[in-house]
Amino acid sequence: MSTKIYPIGIQNFEKIRKEGYFYVDKTALVYQLVRTGSYYFLSRPRRFGKSLLLSTVEAYMQGKRELFEGLAIEQLEKDWVEHPILHIDLNIEKYDEPESLNRILNNYLCIWEDLYGSSPSETSLPLRFAGIVRRAYEQTGQRVVILVDEYDKPMLQAIGNRALQEEYRNTLKPFYGVLKTLDGCIKFAMLTGVTKFGKVSVFSDLNNLQDISMSKRYVSLCGLTEQEIRESLDVELHELAEAQGLTYEETCTKLKEWYDGYHFAPNTQGIYNPFSLLNTFKEEEFGSYWFETGTPTYLAELLRQSKYNLEDTSYKCSGFVLRGLDDDDDLFSLFYHSGFLTITGYSSRFDYYTLACPNKDVERNLIKAQPRNMEKWIVT
Image (tube, rainbow, N blue to C red; front, top):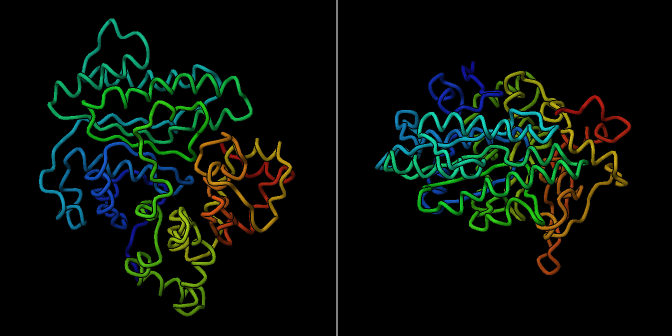
């Protein structure tokens, strides 16, 4: 019988490693990220492991070698240097007024100023952030690591309220701009979120960020591949098969139908949703675990305004829009980035993508996100 403890809802790498939770080794990719670049952006749907990824990077850049015993990075890394970490998680606040964003940023800055000091001349949020980065580098002698989880949540929650969204944009743009102006003090920075806002956005001043959201090299950075499942959950696959009255291969096929199918770049392997997958192994039942955690409010707002029929089987979207370079609230782009649609085809000649539901979990439940049925599924 399997003795695995599944880290459902747990996003802290140190807790997972110290308390013996199941973990699929992604550390070779983490090492590659840090060693081959300095500034990254990654978009993935909710509950795909973005927070765990940042927590893993944080532990690595803190030099906590003991947490990585037996993992790939233990053999790759020789130095294990401790860097100062500035980790911002924008999941916490409810963004329904201009001060919501200011409060959470001010809270982080106050915590860091207790550690690294402050200056009376630093009167704005960006100036305070810049001062903290500079002093952290000067006081420790090591360049700073900056991690931002769900960088876009304020703007996503403000969809439908252009004035509030613009206010958040104007706050975040110079704040994130510190990453570029203080390059000499920064070792590594990574922003994660659901989507990449285009137009006159927070990214217009951050042209040093490498967007790896559609990079073939990093498609498996979050989520699980079929090979990873077969290698690390073989015993559990047999137990699930027995519980379901299926053969081993029938079980693998059913898992694929339900939870595979996310393609974050054309012509790449499918990625399984980790939240649904782990729930299935824990409960030994197939179900809509990911979908039933709720439809984000920003999608609900767009659906109310939409003329599209989500019962269609496929959609076309230009690469310019899908890569987040055009309309901030294009429905197809947001549905792709939110995990309700995925890439099933690409025309390099015309630069357009074909999108469709990734799997049965989404396909059979997407109708519930239509305006007439969606109240039950909305989450904030």
